[in-house]
Image (tube, rainbow, N blue to C red; front, side, top):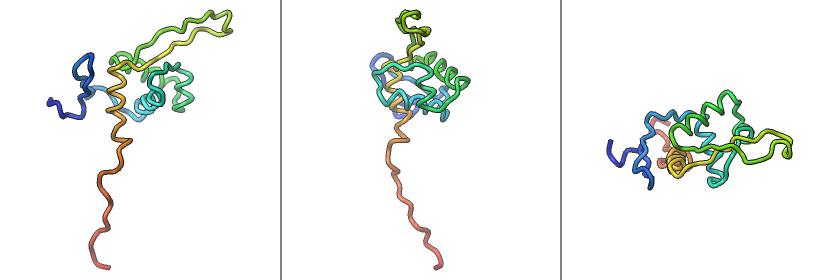
Length: 124
């Protein structure tokens, strides 16, 4: 695979990331888009479900896949459950690799159309 292949993402930490094997479903793209709204901020599952309108049976497999690929990291929120009145949340954040890969994966949806529609020439 050459360096110009759109399935390779340059990152400082790991050289290139090949995301050919990563499923870029609409749901995965929606999750990445939610993270890219504020890339430095961590998110929790319910918040992401509300932002993307995805159900938990879709959201958590996507988050797990992104974490397994190194695009996200996760940790348990450091709160006292009794004081907060709820259990600690599982938080997710983009890694540097994930940030670069998300930018690359979402780029085709941000760029303006490169070609314009031209009417067909034909009998009037």
